[in-house]
Length: 334
Image (tube, one colour):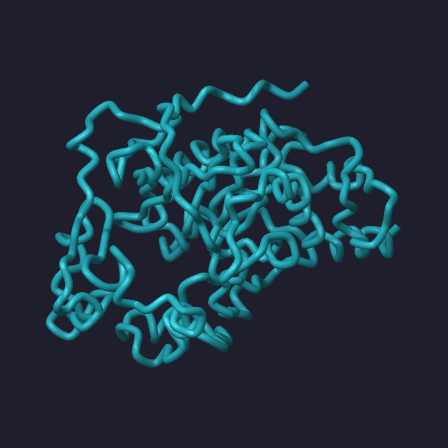
């Protein structure tokens, strides 16, 4: 039986923001899944990442990042970068309050870990030119000690309860998520921006709040089918056969070269994501969630009306289609 969603203790506010989700047309292929999460599920050995932040000229990443892409044999394609899309739709870069124009907002310990950038520091994952001429603002969650959204240390960015930055370390030093309060036909709803907190939805679903359903609609195996998909066909793929435990956990590689800077901290962050994901009035958007395609409206359209459009329910279990080959292989073996 599912547990009720936890109280995230989000302060009440009448202030909202509007959110638009940008598809940067970035796709990264050929990445071994074993470096990201475990256990191995047959038929799903490589990732195709739907990425929301890869530059088109990948050769101009800091060498540490460019070499990792090259040496890993990854295939990266970007049709149109973020700035190009913004300006093509009437949003000049100069109008962006933070990130692009006046300030780069980063998380705790970013400056001490990565500054100076390349070439002054040849091992830095960023270039000095990435922040040259801009204010580099590092968020301090210590300023609001004890203020939390769920179990995340939180920072009220605008000071009016409309947009919170959430301390979510583990994947990388200074990694942050965010929670935006949006208006949806008069109902208060939220969009959780997860960034790289995880790289596959199977790392936080199912959960004690969202157990694997006995019948899954819409059918993740056959999008045009009106017949629900039986959840029982996936149970043998679950860890310990537990319908309340996510399919995956973060990979722990012997050489320490997994995707997470700190695996234990990253796993704790995912536990906090699970609590936010439990609510139907919160749309969880991860940077690499390919199942968003075909469910959400991308920029220049707005995502504020996700609740009445049913995006949460439509997209919640679509990731199960990634296991289709595992089910087919099992049938062939039988």
